[in-house]
Image (cartoon, rainbow, N blue to C red; front, top):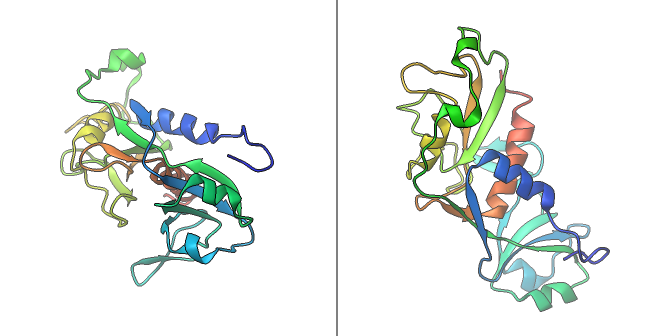
Length: 216
């Protein structure tokens, strides 16, 4: 819902999510919404329903806490769509969809058309990427921990195994094939059940887009 364009939806976010977390399914969640606010003004009854402020821009850390996020884009729960649409402070409204990873899939390099004859010690050099999923078991794979938007900490460890399975397409255990020289980071946006919210996907994409410029 957008007051200036009711048909407008977050297509770019969904496309990016499908690109980064394969495969996935969308489902409508409970009364939980992502809203954009005008001039950071929040009515009292909306403020009481806030459960998250979406990360936009650089992630500043002070004493282990995230600061400086502002309240232009927030997530609310247990407040009706009708009430939100009637508020002058709300300029955009989207359902915070629940998302799911699919179960057991047979991943293999042939499926992505990888030619092993072109792989050498420099394969993937200067390539930087992030995998948004259930995290990664970095005791098995040589993948860096990015950020955990499920538990709101910097340890994106995989407690489901789906993210680790997906990441093995990029880094095989013990060999780091095929992307030997690439910088690969895991961003946790799905929980131990392989479930999450679009709002966490948005934060993960924003975090990756911001941080990848600074990764060395």
